[in-house]
Length: 450
Image 1 (spheres, rainbow, N blue to C red):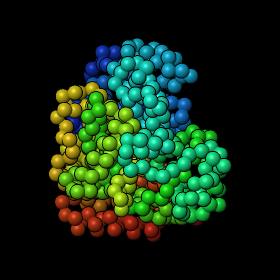
Image 2: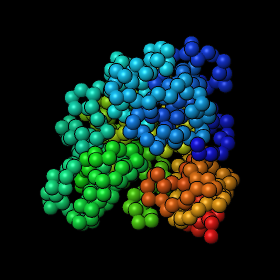
Image 3: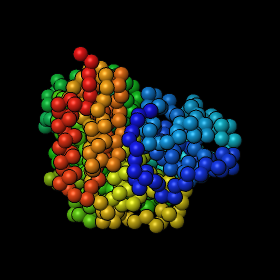
Image 4: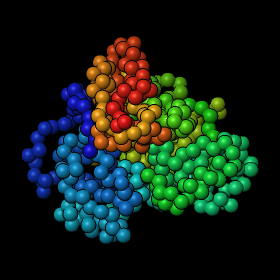
């Protein structure tokens, strides 16, 4: 597990949280979390605090992500009622869950990106709340499925082509202006995404993706070629129940080139929901959710605001990732988070009804800052305490410890940490952020061997 700093109690407490764990596990209703890694582990903590027994279902696709539980998910994985591996069929998986829980589960919730397909199919198999797999939605993770559905709904979609063989997609490189995007149809965290400036570069990356195992996708899955969308990229987090979508936060990415990669994420800032750009993005995004027949649960949608309006990048049918590091900021700004709103959507109809349609005016200011590495080597010791001591830092999650290998950051999987900054004085916030960027550039966050 990753280590993190102590979170001040106002940011650590969750709505309805109780320190009591006296309730017998056998008496608690069981909720199945599919691949509860990253922020999914924070869902487990929220459910446990509300008195539910949490069973972890690990899919075959989850692989190395299985152990990625943030330290902020206190008590897990030890507090899981049981951990069950996906079986060859839905029927066998359901049987294993019933045996482990000694009861029928009352809900199936997706915890991580790799769990989307199984969560949808299993909830439908068990007759529980969830998103349909009918009408071509067996794999709504597939980015080509997403773009086709959005286009069919009359919404702006990205020009793209999908295939498993270069000959199937070659024509796109002959008609589309460069640069273009080449990426897996199933991925997350910018995994495998490359901006290609020539036909030969596109073909080389296509072949690489077809022969390599992606972090959050299947080997030999198809590869997508897309037009390069120019504009500013936003994130829209929603929770849904019975087709009613509620926006929990709108974010804007701070993406920049670094270490030879074109899309390294340096941070995220929150956007006021009453701004003109947010209103347009929210309306468009909810149309995308409807097009994908998403009726229940959390979604994390990436949208590019282009010169001609919003255009979908992808919809992720789970909570905002990044190990939940953003949660203290969301709670400071709005009083709640997508995580507890997701639990409301599945298990508390009245609480969901009481959620605002969009976030109310922010109660504080702040942002999420990713910690980037420009250096590489074996780590002898870390100096994360220098970040923790900054006055606006209320949360720090460390992704690398002494003895680990430091690599240059090229995507979300190469981040060395994430911190949340909240302060009433924007000048203090800016000063602290500049200090962090300086430490990244001069390498003072780590002492490296030799």
